[in-house]
Image (cartoon, rainbow, N blue to C red; front, side, top):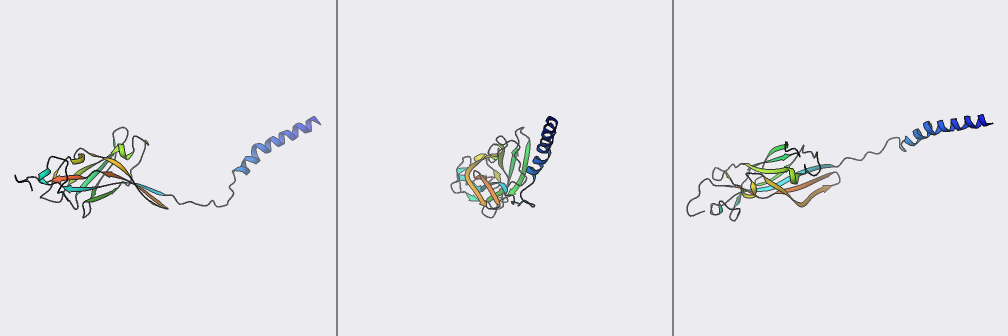
Length: 179
């Protein structure tokens, strides 16, 4: 009788080891429902101006006019200070740029975050009368991004939008009466 109990325990043990885990691993559905992935983008926005000669050398934009088609660059560096993203963007007819950072990757959640890793620099102005870069908001050195809490959301898309401060070019020469 003891041999039969021993045999029964061995059979039950084998069942527990092989049959039950495979039953538990089977999905409830033959075809698991698919959930579409939500696309997420990181975006940088800002405006490029022509600074008035009257305020050249300051950070004032009083009397400034926007520059259509001005070009800026967005550069992001990883936690090792290596360039991990670079792309040039062109402003629209109102001097506004919306830079979608296609291909930007976070490898370290805090150190590679756009607020710490990315800067915006002035590249070029199409205006011959206003094409000298200024360091207003660090447009030459690299303007840091700031969060204004802007997010575009839809069921299948999300864009987190960061702002670069307004950037400005200035005229090469300004008359003495500052116009």
